[in-house]
Image (cartoon, rainbow, N blue to C red; front, side, top):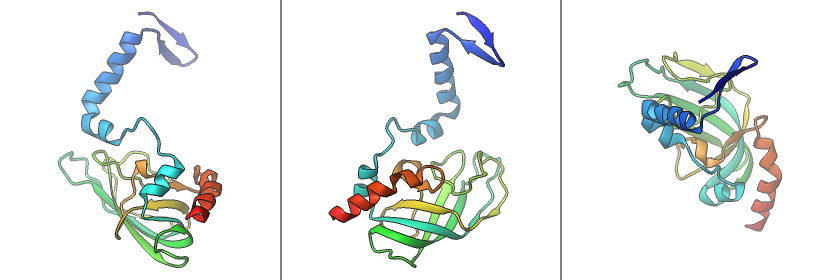
Length: 173
């Protein structure tokens, strides 16, 4: 194994060492790492087919319960009310209010709508800022749960890139 300094990063040249580091991470963070990791990101077409409702919606109000540092404590729950702006699929028309309740935290795969939150460990309860616009791929009945593997995305973080495809898919139906 050879190591060399490149700028401020340590570069490890051994594939065996890199694999050992990945294996150690999986062992340390085990279930959360494997449960939330997918080899393939869903395509817009797949997300559209799987979802019962596909809408563009604005955050009206949201809040999160506290996340404890205790690993045995329950996950934080993020509850968000969205107002539908555009409907591509399902029964939520423009103006409808959609409720989501999502488990978020180290042991959960929920997608937080809070753009400033990076790690949910010992996070205090907080209010979530209204106004952000999201493309939501939702299943079944309310309250819905937001997940990384559904295709849900915030406008400004990639959601705008799928708008054209959503309009085409909705016209086919």
